[in-house]
Length: 476
Image (cartoon, rainbow, N blue to C red; front, side):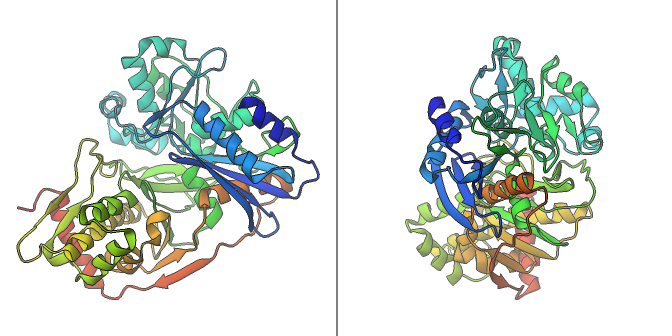
């Protein structure tokens, strides 16, 4: 497969007029071929990744080769990769993976996160040092787990990369100096948004010794070329890629409802939330990207539909037929543990079920409201850090739900715009590729499909108050 991708990249013409953006996500590789003049998508392809919370990174390379082969790239002049954040790719002295990459959603390092917090002097010390308090998703905690649980693998490790770093390195022919960017580096736990530099002391605290790390490139830097001479941009993390594509305005927060849920926006200064709710990440433009992430988002809707034995459209109809508050029925949507709040061992549950409210409609409505309440908690966490929120921009597979679009304004307490369906992470990577190629950031605009205002402000207060009672253990 390696020879296949080399042949593809060799065939890219230097006089090509398009750019390519790659989203290497948890579930799949998506590639967009984009016209750099206006951001319109010319071609696209997708290749699935293996399931699980640990994956051989070579599977991502194979998926990238397949997707590039499908779209045909002989008219592509530049490429950049955005990837799932936090994943730990450990390489040995020869540049080979020491073990399967541990992904962001692998929670085995939760005890190690708690230990690291204590060893540095508490959550506030971490927030002040790097902008983020460690949880199980953060790369530093996975390094600690490896050093503790797999000392032989740890002993062979010489370099640590993130998923997008590793793919960029491979595209550039595996040079001696790999690169990353601020956006993805800020999710490691050992790069500081406060100073804009690595914290080698924190990496050694996590792993027990030094490791090689990628150089942090500038937002518009050409970091290398493929064997065929194609410009390679620095790439970034997935959320920073989506923000780069969308370009939220002041007070606009992006609410992404995918496998995970995220609430984030561009900001002009770093944040340091000692509660650990807001990760003080950097963005792909040279600014900042305060963000909260939940482990449970669109798949909560899928579980609800499965319980009721309906398809997504039928589930939406049921949810929209019920009254706000679902008759007092509440879902705590922590189906597979949770990151925000940090409850890796939590489970989901319906609370308040009675003979009066025990209908299929109320069960569907409570499912949608519970998922949205988890994201609304994220909006509150951002505003508590001084980040303004006047409008929510909905993206991701879950945003296509008619029930989500209808209920979101009243649950979030914000006007909502649902953006047109698009692979925004890959589009952001394409925008970065065009930026590196042309020397200036493109002025693309993304379409906003529907807009809904808050219809009744009291709904948010009532629904979220009941949800908070369940979340905080006050419900009977």
